[in-house]
Image (tube, rainbow, N blue to C red; front, side):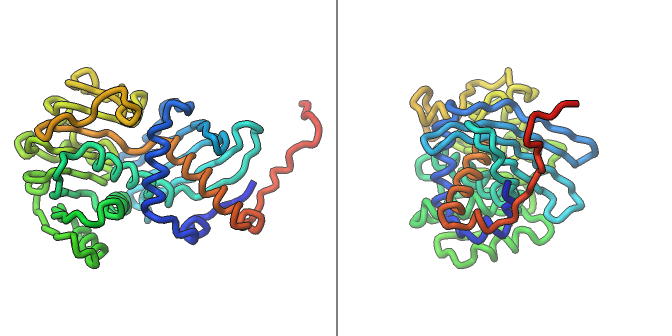
Length: 320
């Protein structure tokens, strides 16, 4: 079993469009995977440890494993994850991988895919809050797919995040930034509202600030439960991960995004519909990314040069 670090993955320079394509492919083929709901452990206030197992099946091979992601507010970065990748057909453990890069980019890719799929036709004003790596990845991947569309980006100010976020994208001539003092100001007038906040104890926007036609994308599912009660449609990447939400039985209409891609249900049907998308990315996306990264590194001859862990398994059946 090989050890694949953050730097190993980052050095591959995987393009934003590749990240988008991987996400779209896995969303479409979600039905071919085995995906139990994640186990979420919350031992302290603001801290969580999520354990996410899955097996994916594809023409390129069957892979499985477990992702463990933790959030500790006092740690830098606060979100950190690891992925154990195995060959699902043979049971061979292939790699223990950093999951931090994969988590940020696959979540951003799913967010960008959700926007392009469910936003109204001529969307151009995007409200962003929680301006960490996931929000950055969402915008980077979105504009890689929409290089000619002009956007107004409304940023909710918090510490120095808004200024840093605008500086990060300062070279993009098709982006114009506005800074907002309140969440309501950020959401009002936005065609799309994106939240990358990883901890929100309460809802953050009043009902009246959501215009007709708005798409709300809480990338970590937090802060918008009031929208559950009056938005026209709610979509998610997996029913099993949201069916326990307190307002699940009160959604006006609900379906999985994979059903839209496979023609089973309609997505947006008018520019007046308010739509809420609980699409944070699921373990199948992580494992799909991990398997492609492993194969990419193997094809480049990198895998054989990486550190290997010898578990010193017994050569014969072990008896107690």
